[in-house]
Image (cartoon, rainbow over all chains, first blue to last red; front, top):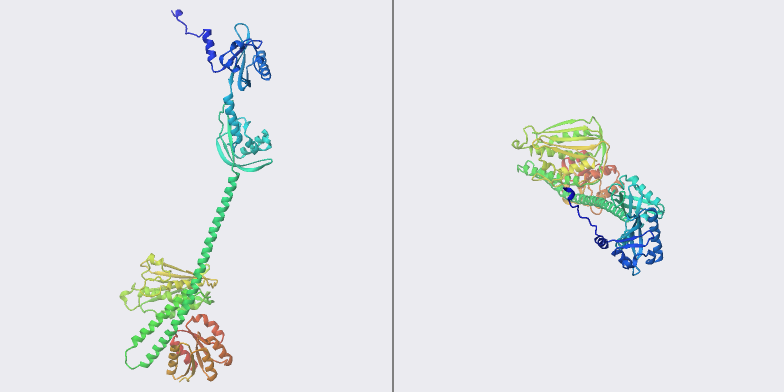
Length: 509
Length: 121
C-alpha cells in the first residue's frame, strides 16, 4: 500500500534551480577543467559587469587586470590539482574599474558527468572591511593599551599603545615578558575577569602606574578562548594623587601646628592674664591692707581707752576685729590663687611641722569638733614652702570645720552628732599625701565637679577662691589636689606633693 | 618694769603711722613718725632710736632703700619691716640684709607689742 505513496516533492526542475542560484545574495561561478567559465549566476555577472553569455567560455584574464587575474589563476590551479578547498581574501575590480575586497571560496567538483569543475563563491567584503578599518583606527587611536591573549599564552593582537608600553618595538618577546611580569604579581591575570592597579616597566620605557583590566577567558570567534586586556596609564593621576596626599598631609600638619600654636597662645594669654591678675591682686591687697591696719590699730586703741568704763562695746569691737580677719583672709586667698612667684621651698620634717600647725589650728576650732591625726611619713624630709602649705592646710581645715559645724555655736545645725576632722599623711612611690577628711554632709556630684572652679561657691559669702587657691598651692609645688566626696558621707581633700622638690612657676587654671 | 624706747614709725599711710605711734605712746615709749623713706633717713641722723618699724612701699625713698642707707650709717640699727604685700616674698631678703623681721599688714598687734616688749627688756 505504501509503495504507491507519493514521495515528498523535490526541486528538480533545472529552471527553478537556476532561478534560485540567480537570486542567491552570493556571487557564484563554475569553471571547467580549463578554468573557463561554464556558469555565472546573476550576482557574479553583475560583479564582473558582463551578462552570462559574454562570460561563458572566457577566463579571468579576459576581464580582470593582469595582476588580479594571475592571482586568481594560481588559486584555481592549486584547487584543481590538489582538490583542497581554498579561501582567500582578494581584490577584484568591477566593471567600473573599482577594486573591491572579496572573500573567495573555491573547491573542486568531480561531477556525475565525469568532468572536473571548479566551483566558487565571492562575498563582497567592502562593508566588513570598512568596519574593520574603523576598528583598526579606533584601536590605534584609543588612549588605552589593548592586548588580546589566547588561552595558550600567545598574543593574537595588541594595539600600538600596548606595544609602546611593552617596549622592544612591540616585539612578541617584549609583550610576553610584560604579561608574565604582571602575572607574577597577579596570578589570576588574565584568565579571570579582574581589575587592579600595578606598575609596569620595560627596557627603554619609563615606569608607569597602570590599571590593568582583563575580560577573563572569553570565546571571541576563535578556536580557543582569549582574554582582552586593557591597560590604562594612570601615572599622572598617581602623581596627582601623590601631590594630593602631600597637600593633605601638609594641611594636617598645618592644622596640628595651628592647634599647638593656639594652645601655646591660650597658655600665654592665660599666663599673661594670671600675671596681670597677680599684679592687680598684689596692688589691691596692698591698698586694702594699709587701711585695714589702721582700722585694727584704732580698734585696739579704742578698746584700751574705754576699758573699765562700762560702755559695753566689747561685742562691737570684737565684730570689727573679726571683720578685719575675714578681709585679710580673703586678700590672702586672692594672693594665693593669683600668685605666680617662685616658692620658697626647704626640705623639712613634714609630719612634725604638720603636728605643730594642727595644734595651733585645733585651738581655734569650735569645741564641739574633734581633730584626729595619723601621720605616717616617719620623719621623712619633704621640700615645701611652709607659709604657703600652711595656708592651704588652714583653708582645708576651716572648710571642713564649716561643713561640719558651721560657726560652731548652734549644735542643731551640726551635720553630725560627732563631727570629726581626720588628717592623715602617708608615703607613696614618688610622693606624699596629706589628706584632710571630714564626716560632714559631703558634696553632690555637680558640686564636686565644679569645686575647683574659681569663683564657684555654695556659701552665701566667700570668694569662691578657697579651693582653687589650695589647688594652686599644690600645683606650685609640682603636686596636685584630689577631691573625693559622697553626698551624706563627708569629703576628702588630698594634697599630693612630690618627694623630689619641684618649685614651679607654672600657672594652673 | 621695762625701759621706755625711742621708736621710729615709718609709713606713708598716715592713718597707719599715727595709730601705731599712738599705740606705742600709750605704753610711754617716745615715738617719732616719718611719712616717707627720706624723712626716715633724716630722722635717724637727728635722733637715736632703739627700734624702727618701716613700711616698704613709700614715695621718694622706699623702706628698703632707706633701711640700707641707715644701716650703712648705723650698723646697729634695729629695724623691722611692715608690708601690705606678701611678707613671704620679703622675709628672706630682709633678714639677710640685717632686718629683724617682717610684719604683714594688717599687723598682728599682740605680736607687735610682744616684739616691742622684747626690745625694751
